[in-house]
Image (cartoon, rainbow, N blue to C red; front, top):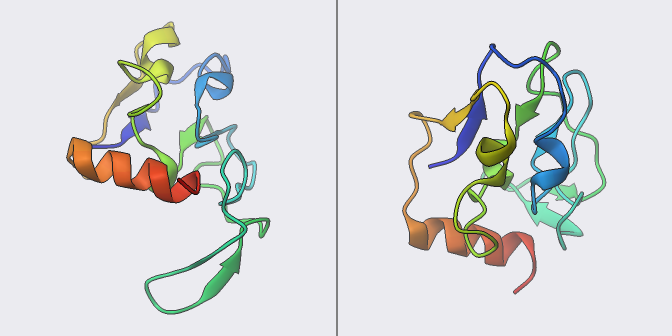
Length: 115
């Protein structure tokens, strides 16, 4: 499963530099597929081709957020999700709406990092 940041976030930013996929962004900041990954472009489910540098709409305007499609729970990098390990208020938690197996998380890591 992916990790999500709850609305208890105090916007301290401790989680952001810990993410090996650059899946964590400050509230209101646009994100990119390519940031922190090897993706130069990707094809979305609807067939649309998107540049890795194309700015995407922020998931939250109020507090830090995690882009689910880039979150691998640090699988293949660390033993546990690093955002959750450093969060001082324990607001980086499992996202019950996005459950993935370890194999799926590893495949996502390989896709994001061109392995």
